[in-house]
Image (cartoon, rainbow, N blue to C red; front, side):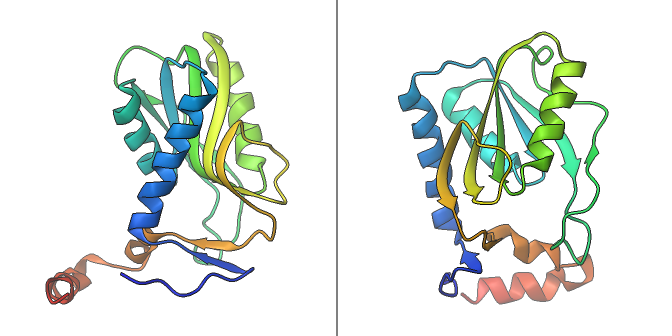
Length: 180
């Protein structure tokens, strides 16, 4: 699949590019030498990143649902909701934790999640962050990132096609995909 050209305002990412970015992020963490016990991803954007990294590192994956991009069809950040519970495959959140997401935009979500984790999970001894994209206007500097985006473009990720797909459209969607 080809994507439109990237500009200062729009960054278009294909599935192949997306997976390479995750691999580069995993490599950046590895070459740093930092060892962690668990990965906590922020849903929804960080789920794919966390899944791939937990497989590469063979460590438990925790998922914390957060939501702030609900305004204007998901293009404007609104009030942040943080889920009450974390889903994790083994034990509870503790030790050295790598917090992953797809991007740090304004940094507001990361700041609030950091405070939430410190309060709710005192067993966390060290918390570092890893993202694919770090936007230039962010209030937060991630510990690990792949690309810094000084012009703060809107990132068009490959899975966004599903944001407008509805169940009644699936039959024609699948049929269209089988013709490629």
